Image 1: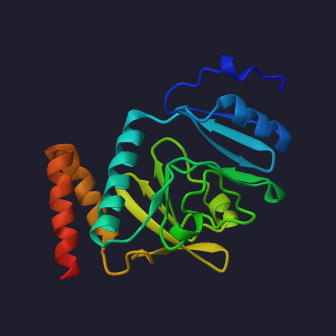
Image 2 (image 1 turned 30 degrees about the vertical axis):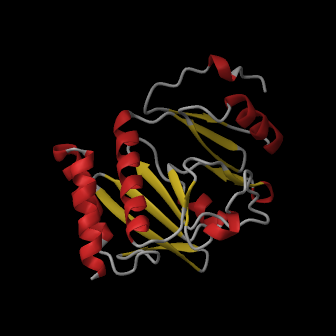
Length: 213
């Protein structure tokens, strides 16, 4: 690469687009960026996007992720949360790093694996994207075959379900079909900002248990 990535200074909430990046260069950039970084990347057909999230983005990401984990724990469903793992398919020239992702139905298929290869391993069952200053690359998630994509934007939760290779917006999550999450998740996210995390999580867990009865 002609660009020295260590000299790139991307302000919080901003993104940089690199064009005409071939796959081998993309792989080299990933290695140079390393795993322990604040930035996220998306890659499609030679265009590489590098984005650094705002604190608002990270706060919402952590809270929504905690709410998802609370549901899975209360329902006693085994899961694996892999954060912003890089998911990629070279023959499609596509790669993405979600804000968070969860293996639920396919948890046992990837349990204990340190490296995932989407040519043989299933994609995550659920991906989460918090849209504050950047847009969700839904077409990349579609191409990678992620069955369910959550987008949280402007205080609203949108659940997208993959059908025939395209996302269709749904009122309910296939993973949690009996829970009105598009309505409830934003409520508890706002509650967390006003009442604090621990108090909110206890109340949310109690709500999930009520729905199970």
